[in-house]
Length: 234
Ligand SMILES: [Ca+2]
Image (cartoon, rainbow, N blue to C red; front, side):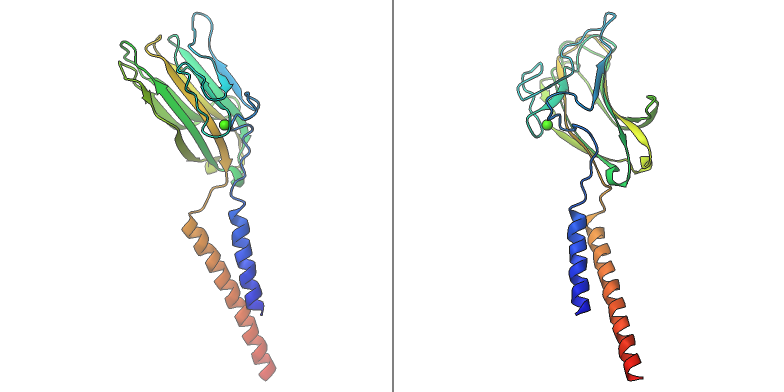
């Protein structure tokens, strides 16, 4: 009877743990407040540096190409990813990383149309900084070559990053863009569904761990029963 109860308990634990994988602590990672609540969105516009489309949160149909399209929900964040030489955009949020939030998931989309000639790529990076803006890790870099490029839409690109080396730390999660040359083609960079979740073990290893724990528990239960039987007969 105890064996059956233990087996039922093992199954219950496995089902419960599967439901606890998501534990994100990013505020407004899907921009569903309709604004930048939880985020700091900046650009270095001024002093002769201008921009095509500023940081914006909106529903579908926005941006220079009027084709913003949230990855999910009703809103996404975007800018024109184009402007004067030296233009830089930042979007960041400080978060504390623990074991339940050691996997970062991001979704971004780039749309562009090379116009004329250019020799330098536009850069998009996903970075981990400390709260004093010191770079700790570059997680992702995308270089967009604008030089006469045809209309291009990358569609939504999904990425996951292991942040387990930052467990116990408060980090600044940053999306960074730089535009090195002035107006060499209109563009659009869009972000949505930024989240943190637990470091997810491979399904096979989770299953093997669960089965192993259950087998070990059932074995211990049987050993105890055998001991009781031996004590009763001796
Ligand atoms: Ca959204």
